[in-house]
Image 1 (tube, rainbow, N blue to C red):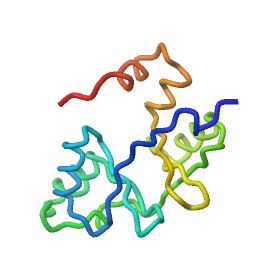
Image 2: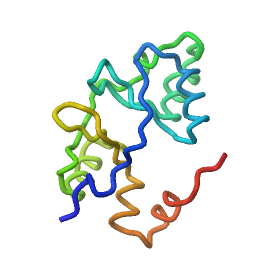
Image 3: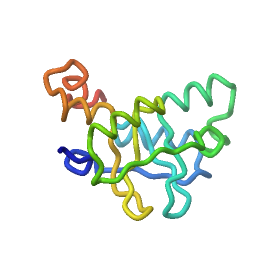
Image 4: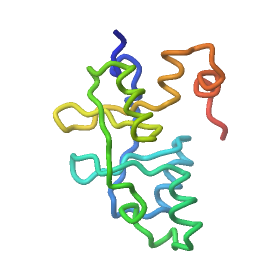
Length: 138
């Protein structure tokens, strides 16, 4: 059995729900990532992706300089443990139609597992794995 902890990403960027869309977009640009984990203290409050900023923010004519991440973050957060089976994590992604799962240990954020991480681990010859393993465009 392959566990989530064996291949999860531990290089995380977290932001407070009161941070703005502009701040999140700048952080994503500077860190060459497509998402930030939104936290409320030590608790995971959600994930905001570059797509969320575009679809839930800009496309809805929200001002990115004043709109807070809390306003566009999905409130339903599905998490996994680093000890969970990778197949179970993939099943959760399918069931809840999400592409990223925060990894928590005793409620504390310790990592993130993405659909791309699963592809690289489970199907290394797949196109998604090739794309996910490449260096980000900058």
